Length: 371
Image (cartoon, rainbow, N blue to C red; front, top):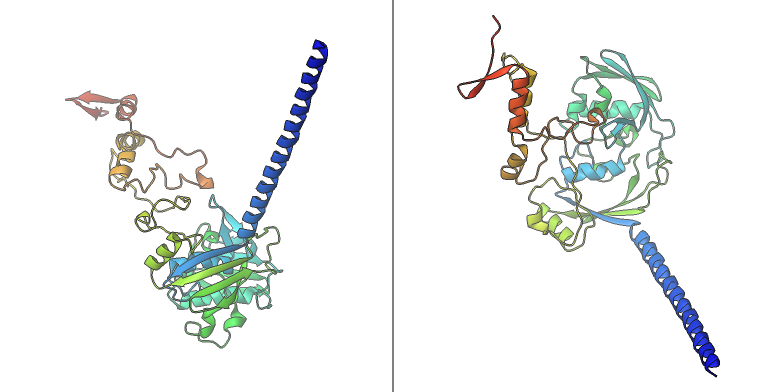
């Protein structure tokens, strides 16, 4: 009798485990399904993006002086050369280039590129753009200030002549290229076509309204190696940067790019995620290398260790900057392994001088003179 009771208890226990296992499996499956549905919904959301421009002057990138326009125009227009995250020159509309002499560059263009209106991209477009940049005041005028002329070798080859030797001039070929045919017989600066120009970039202007622009994915974009998940971009237009910040704060804009150090005073600190990108602007200490003491490497190293860079960043720049010992410390392929800062170490500064023949005299370090 007792053995039968134990048997029944054991059977009930096994059944309980099986029921619990089935319940757990179903619950896990439901959770996985919910996760898949959430991921799917997030993917659907990423197919559209809303940006903003404050104080739009023109969507023509070489005429505009608006930073918001310059950022967004990179989606619509391509340049001959782009820069990677570590500042390497990367082919774009130019597939290759070569320095023929001290003051000339030969550039081969891609042959599979079309403007969004269907015309072929050719060398004529490159010369047209450079000629316009030479004629007008543009933020890209600096890039072509030493260009004396552009020779067309064939439809997909141009030769750029300079009035002097400029090392690595390909790094200046990052200005947007515009269509010659599109602007043919037009007043380049004042034409109404500047409100909706044609481009060769990832996205094309699909609609222009007084309060917004619509960009759609350019299905004929030449770079087939890069897939674009965002199908549509709405660009809301605002009369002031304050309106732009407020629209972002209440969730009407998905993304803003700003160099304003005090932006958190306008948009707060919660409700969004931020990403800081280190720029190339820097405040630096320059030495007079003509001075006999400052010309010594150990003196410059000692001075570097004697400056409390972190304290300067905190007390003067309100922690809005980063300390550095070299202008290309952050993100450049030319500075791989470079230390971000020599650090603040007064004792190390003294030791460097002592190791190089400096001695203490009257409570200060001095260099022995050779007779």
